[in-house]
Image (cartoon, rainbow, N blue to C red; front, side):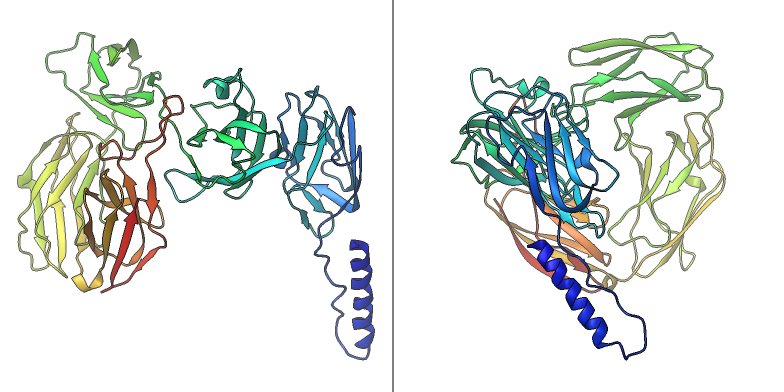
Length: 536
């Protein structure tokens, strides 16, 4: 049939060309082939039973090429040794599969080529092409399909493996760590999965962002999603609830601490850093001082200390039942000079706070050397706070609309732990009028007894800008928003700890549910939006 269409296209092209032969100009050529390749024959035939061949040959009606076959091909059930598939990189009308592994008896196998098969000329893809056979007397025909979504973010990961483990006498919870599944599929570049040719039975349904591509769960690098119950086929041919993909918090492990520069040591770790104690065991001078703070967004604790003559320092690290003693050798000779950055470049939005961040902990602030003036050169009253957990200094003052400000730090305003001081620094910024901003009003309707964390996010970088905890139906207002695009989400805080918690496979804990308000809020100047948000 496809050959008929190609002949028809060619005849049409000839008619068009000859009918315009008296006209001047360049001919446009024939009609573009937009049809995917078609399988003509397969040896052994498609859906063969009692399969025992070591070689499979699949022929097509035109020359094809294989693109990204290693990423696209999914074999279900998985094989220990992948077959040899040729040709790769050169056009051919045939695909040859040489079996290397021993096949299981009475098993239906599916070779899903994804979108790897394309015609050689136009690149038309033969989507989701499958070759199916059985080593038994019949072809298993049951199937299940559904979706996989990320539990935390709106974006989705590609190439998620979706696995079925049969629930029988050999099943246990640890099977996903050391054995390959009975059946496997892949979402490729979508959120959808479709597992076909499955036997009747009960199964554990797992989604895996499989970094090593071995169908075995490695908590250190893989994301996992677990359907909230065992599925039964043929009853569960459609999985109505999505599988939520999440990254587990690994068990606590201390990595080798290191000296970053003179006076600063970094303690790296994996897992939760809550309740970590770092105790110095080495003898140090009486005037020795040290400050430790968590590195924002990183699994690191920074430990700053005054300079000493020791060649090394010995520390005792404890966390719950974990105890370890480590030695850090002090070889760096240069202290990192004091650096100060502002969170404001030109405009300080009316809802924001002026924050200066230093690379080294500040030990002393001389407020007599701070000059804070407005556009009329009048002194601006302010207070400041030095955050204990970070190197941030917040300046609090009564912001006036449509005003210009200049903050000057004279030399030696800040003195860090190494007795290093700043040079003269000037920060100039302005404020706007309230009409330059917009606002969002959200009527939160709770369908759950648990508290809900309502978060406002920047649509561009998904940064959390504001958060409000709601325990009852309430109108939440986000005011003085600069023009831009925003997202709003609700986190059902099941354990009432005022943060989102991920899941854990062995503890059978699902990640806390996040519901995103549908659509993006496109806020403009002097713009007001009111919506209702029901969260169940």
